[in-house]
Image (cartoon, rainbow, N blue to C red; front, top):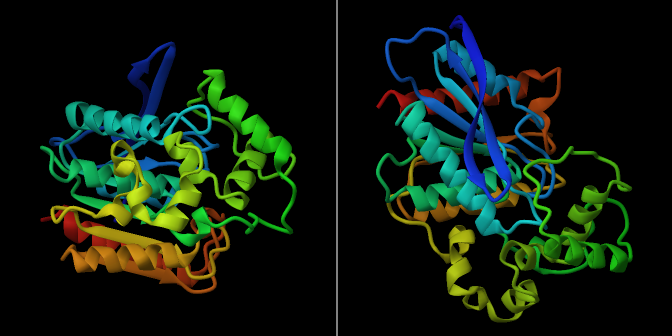
Length: 317
């Protein structure tokens, strides 16, 4: 399929306080009418990155080839913001796309962006103009799983004493200096990478998502009933996905060291129990971020084609 010419623009989709949240729109230069829109949410463990971080070129090119519109928004980041802040941003970006681009939307995301896509779709599935489909690319699916509520497992290397960083996390959460994007620097000495490593090793993600101190430990000891009622929307896979949840495609490296393949396997099982159409494309010998490498292996290309074929079949319905 040959690609069509496209143009790119940046728009403000939401203002909150002094912040302007922006998104980039890459749309066909000419179209007979509104095309399918793909919203892709960036990764970075909800702590780092922005709308240009690790862009999935294969997905951008696939949109161009199909005459689809590709949209990528910023959203507010932890620890200065909360999970509810980030989710409300995604919902606002979705509403902007529905109003300004197309009512036919595929909601996608990579890594932490996959979590946001899955979580937002649970809210949107019962609303007008729900997503046609969800695409989660090596996404986090459940922050109540053992990896996120049990202390001791480092992001990489050996466990370290994170006392000083825990203090900085607390200060950042109280600072009011909310970020809508931050460079993703894969260096242990980087401040935000230190935040990510600490949130994982010290099992603090549920706490900072919800601003509920000690929540991870409460979930570990008491189960999901420990989650405050007004925060349950951030844990849809654990609390329960609606029967109206859209068809879902999951793409995940089987050897993922940062977000375990089991995250997508678990989500697939939950969706199947709910009667939701779901396809899990597991990629052999693939680690986190395998799809953004400049030279994609034949096996990876084959998996990407399978994913796109699944999306094509859904978009045509």
